[in-house]
Image (cartoon, rainbow, N blue to C red; front, side, top):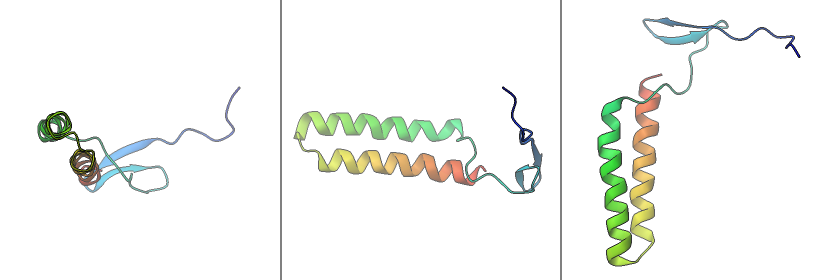
Length: 77
């Protein structure tokens, strides 16, 4: 089946990636450098979960990791 609407094409300008309607994307691709602190936070989550056995602090650490990737992705849009 073919779609009636053409696929949206993107173009990169000095102000970010824009589609044919001129709107910028909400999120871009995260940098490779953001994964180092995210992996450290995941490791701290696992260690905290094993040693303390609680769930609150590991959930907080994972939330910080997700926010970190989301913020970096939003900055790189």
